[in-house]
Image 1 (spheres, rainbow, N blue to C red):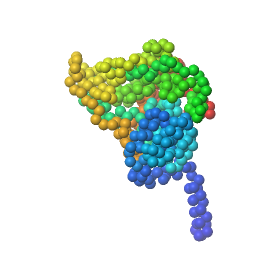
Image 2: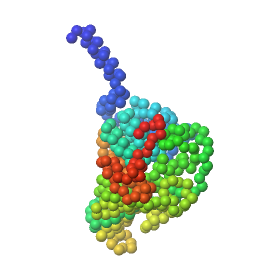
Image 3: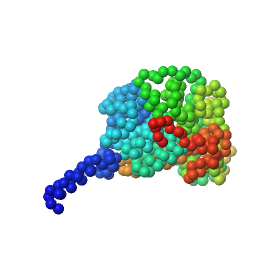
Image 4: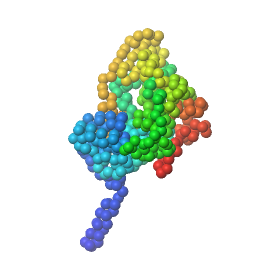
Length: 430
């Protein structure tokens, strides 16, 4: 090749490399990044659990918080000031997560928004070549669960779901005991969570959107609706457009432990449920303040219960009970107790021995650096638990006993099938 032709071809090759899609360039560069290098992290949804996630992520070495995103300007500015004070750097601020994802220097996105935003933000982050820590439940519908699994697998991103009990020594000990056969044959697992915050008894009236709040962006793919403070910060999960009540809030944590303990990785034979606002008929919430769900399997049952009355079995307002032919194991985040058959007092007791949330975020960061897709709680596991929570709500909302075909994505019920997918408001697309 003549020197002039060689230079011309070289210039063309260089130009082609410059205009490659950013995601491809970033993915190629990522392979050469040393595990010891700094990770740049951004948070979307700064008010509550997302901020707690970020705080624990920042307790680990080799992490920088470079950006925050929220639709509420006052929350965003307050968190920015707090970040600067804690970590010595004022992060860049965004009101639209899509602008944040355009950054080529961003490695990790933490999603702490209301549930109805999780799917869209997570799949967009994966397609933008970012690793993701997403809060539970991963999605507000069964179809969104499948979309999120597909995105993780398609783009090969590291994803951790914020179900931190998977990183707890106490819950690992629960799993060991159930697997060991020490309880004999476990015929039934009772799961419950009774919290008063599921009842909204003195609701606000519809009113103007607070100054500094981008309410249209907060609604996002959800249907257009007037602003009401009792459907907004902290209370949104009690309305079907944004959440699923106690079973999708606490249920994904506790049902996860029931499924894990019983080695369930697929669909139940049948789901039935009943629910309503029975404790407080005047409840402003759309979701159920009282709910019972049965999940049937070939050789055992799992039952979920919730009410807004804060009491429960064994003096615990939330927990699990594995009932076996040789004994009963009772556990929540504070303690675990083993009761012999027909025993009134526990013969063994355990208490937590590690900081599960800090360990959970540490596991995620280590997986990001080593490119290990098997995080402590993968998106596949998060999808399984979220689906079980949605199954319970759908069974109670339709009043039908349901069987779900996870291959064909159908309950074989027109009423139930209509609840598999939430229709997105334009211009947002599923």
